[in-house]
Length: 282
Image (cartoon, one colour):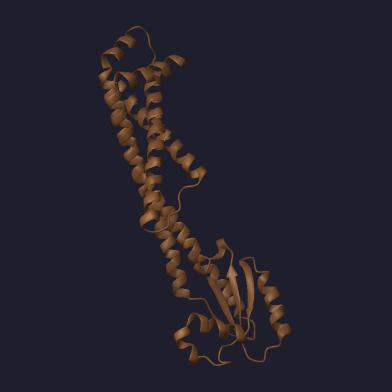
């Protein structure tokens, strides 16, 4: 293993320009993936903040006894999908309406808006089916006149999240495949450049594992450097976006480390595929 590591670093010194070109190419390939990941991260955060506003409002009939409302709120709070339940009185509903619709404040008069029970759901229960299920259960209480939860908006929000997830997976796999191809190409050039040396090594009894090891280590190291450079470029892009456009979130330490390790893994995979195919021709 020590000899393989030494051979890998000797290869870097023999062709520094090719090695740097390989690292930069890997970095830009992973940078494209990192940019998409940055967009996906901020889109996910935006969708999560929007999903937090998903709520169900059950409007209470006039004259309902406070005890009945309190008992119902206790029942609803025990639903497995429910995170929080609030009682909105008629006065609170009027004040909210005047605050949110100030230009139409004169339209609202005391008593025109009904009291209501507002229900917020847990993060794992904000899909259309769960929201409808809870809304239907709330509607079974006899003193509830109407239940509203912006059904069309909830459905569209869930569709956007689903599409974003699928697109993210597809593009992620595509960028990963491109990175593997690029890494494989740089390793292939190194294998071809050392073809005579490899042939001599085989003549003196070197095994395929011994011959492959330096190239695998080279690809692994290139992947690490490429991943680190891609992470730096992505951070700079996020900083520029935050400064000149909108505030953008950046990857946490766990995701950042995973990104660099992903570069190393892609380098290893690309090297293994390229070396295995081209050693058979030498």
